[in-house]
Each structure stands twice: as structure tokens, then as C-alpha cells.
Image 1 (spheres, rainbow, N blue to C red):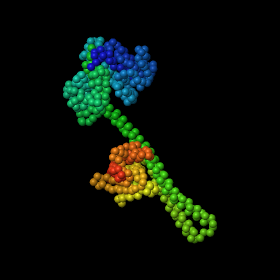
Image 2: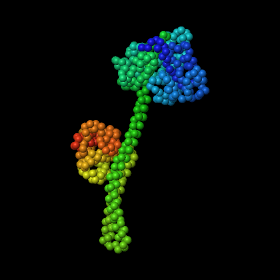
Image 3: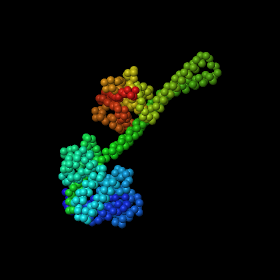
Length: 509
């Protein structure tokens, strides 16, 4: 505990926003001899109008002035900001950008604070300090919508307003005399812990204001997050005798911040999905380019042969029959190239975020058409065993196609010397889910790597190929579709990835 001299010297440093007449009045009262025992001083004033009376007065008194409210937070050891402008948007911006060590009193509470200062001055003049302070303090804590309590050094509640009583579901008689943590936390022991330090304890130890965010339990069993601020109250001798505790419910504000952060994460995920899609597209283009080159070469040779025959001008019926057959082959080859390019364009298209009924069997068929040539070049044998009725799910076809392609590419890259890829699927009637399995005969995954393979940028490729986003994208997309992916593997015995997705509901079908 600080000595009486230390407590007397520990002034509460206050900054004021708004340079009107109320600011001048507050400057006069705080600087008057009457309020030296309150251990408070005004260290800064901010107003957009440099000619405001309060700005002039503060400047004349040697107090820091500015037209930028945010500059007040740069003041050394600032404890409290009092906002007098009645601007709710400004108050919200200040609350979002202020340091944790600084408290804020809004315009409604600041009026009460102003009145409190005025009444305190009257107390000194009329020598009725005790009775008027007690009367005003009760009016103050009842006038605000925020929870307010006055506590003794042993954590007992001496005063409590209606807002705090409503949150606790207690009457005043039930709350007075109880420990504060019994009322706010519905607990039987102190709320102080490394995760939720008690600001009351800090104020008692330092004689200064303190702040913390606590999770408080309401009378209905729900939880609310509160910004808890504690302020020391000294007697005429400078001894800390009581602590004022203000409870500001910030649940809605935190919820908005979490929602905003969730939207940002979704946007980042969409960007990573597109980047991963471009990586996969590059692999597909390299593979498909060779496959398209062969039919194009055949078409070119047939066209040259037909053109040469027509140029000679001696075309027989047999020649025309051959030409017709050649043109038919060319048409088939062009259609095959068009189909391949169409699949590539479909995969390269931006995510439409359009959910609909998707047949996973069709998705796998398209993926096989795009990767078949590369599997042949890599000496990989493909086996597919899917139910003839298909595997219907509800989701975004483009994203589900990306899942399938990433798992196929992952299997192919695990079989550098060739091998066997088996794709199977089915319906789990009991769990009401659809499943797919991709089993390769590659090198397998070590036990130490297995828990990390779905982490972004994690890769087991020793040559540094790829960026390690493929499997993390698979995990993220399936989570978006309320599904999951599981893996089982033993070193030297290949790996099996199992995709599980919910079956579509009747409303979706």
C-alpha cells in the first residue's frame, strides 16, 4: 500500500475533449484549491476550434492544447479522457483507438462528473462534505446506464446502482455488503487470475485507476463482456478508503469486431482459394497442353492431305470417301479439344459462391479428364469405383472440383516413380453422409508430419515444389461445406484421404 504522502501526490491525469464553457468551468474547479485533495489535474484539452474559450484558457494556464483528439493519448501517464462534445461517433472512435490504460467518460457521464465537481466545491464551502458527497454519489451511480459500484478495500459493496443490480438480478438489500465478485461473476472466490487480472487489486496497490475486460455472468445464466474501470477515492487525509468501479457492457461491440474479423478471414480464405486454384491450373495447363498437341497435329496433317488432293484436281469417289472420313476424325478431335479447354475454363473461373446440387461422380469424371494424360505420363494406374446412382451433395461445384483436383495432384506427387491411385465413394445411410476416398501407393506420411499436413504452407516436399496450400485449401473448403477430411497413412505404405460431406436435405433437393 502507498504511504499517505505517496497517495496524496498520485494525481489522476485527465484530458478534456471540447473547449466550451463547461471545459472552462471544469478547468477552474479542478485547478482550485478545493480539489487538490481529489488528486486530479487536467493535462490536455482538445477542440477543433482553436478560438474556443476553453482552449484559450487552457493555453493561458500552460496546459497542452490540440485540434486532434487522438494526440491526447500521447500524453504521458494519462488516466482518463472526459468527452464533452455530445458526439456519439467521436466517442465510439475514441473507445476503439484508446490505450488500455486510459479510461473514457462520455458526454452523459461527463455532465454528471461536471456536476459532481460543482457539488464537491459546494461541500467544501459549506463544510458539509460527508453528507452531500454520499448523496451525490448515489445520484451519480443511479443516473448512468453503466453499472457502478463503490467498494471498500475488502471488496465489499457499499454502493451499487440499478444497472448493476439488474445485471446481477438482485435487490439493493441483497447486494449491499456482499463481495463484488459474488455479484458480478456469481463466484465464491476472487476473480483475479493471470487471464483476468482484477483492476480493483491494482488500484488498491498503486492508488491509481486501472482497467480490465472481464466476462461477467448474468442472473439468467448468460455471459457478458464488460470493460471494468476502477478509480481510487481518497479521504481528506489522502488515504485511499473506497474504490469506484464502473462496468461498461461491451458485448455488442466485441461481437461486431468478431464478425468484422470473421468477414476479413473469409475474404482472405477466398483469395487463398483462388491463388491455390491458379497453382493447380498451371499444373493442368502443363499436362493438357501435351494432350491437345497430338490431336492438333493429326488435324493439321489431315487438312494438308485433303488440301493437296483437292489442288491436284483429280479426286475420285474413293478419295472423297477418304476425305469425308478424315474430316469426321478432325471434327471429333476438335470436339475433344474443345471439351478439354472448356473444363479448364470452368476450373479457372472465379469462385461463384453458388451452392446447388452437385454430383461428385461428375466432378471426379471432369477431374480425371483433366489429369488422365499426366497420370499416363507419370506411369500411374487409375482405378475408380463409384456407385452408378451418383453421389449427390449440396455445395459450390467449382470449390468441390478444386478439392478433388488437389487430392488427385497430392496423390500423383506422392508417387514420383509411378504407382496406383484408387478413387472410391459411397453413401453412409446411418450418418446421412457421402464419402470419397483417394488411396495412393506412394511413400506415405511420417507420424511426425501427419498432424501438420492440413496447416497452411506446410509441405513434405524436400525439393521445395509447391507452396503447401493444397491440403489446407481442401480442409478449408470442406469446413465451409460442413464436411471434413481425414487421413490415414504409414511410411512406405501410401496414404488414404477420406472426404465426408453431408447429404442434401429435402428442402435442398
